[in-house]
Length: 105
Picture 1: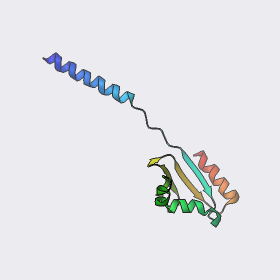
Picture 2: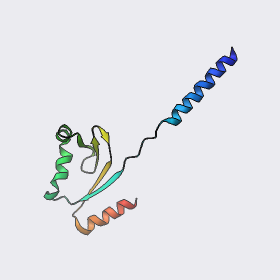
Picture 3: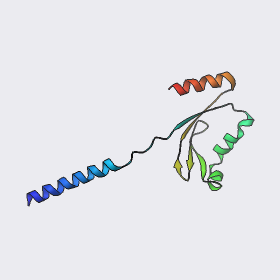
Picture 4: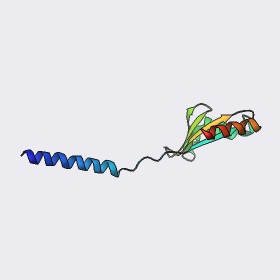
């Protein structure tokens, strides 16, 4: 009887290891560094970020706010497809330099 219990425990351990090994690892979502100057001609970014309910209802794609004006997750039918880090400045060379520094991290 003891052998029967030991065999059952061994089979359950092997089965659980097998099932764990067969699971697909979660794919890491990409990080998008988005630099922009906070001018009125960049308003589509602000509109998309401030109206997630509207975009979810009218297309199933919307931005989930992680940190206001700094970090968002675009969601497609409820699943995160990326992580967006937003860096704003006055524009021009200053913005390009900030993006270069961020991409090296």
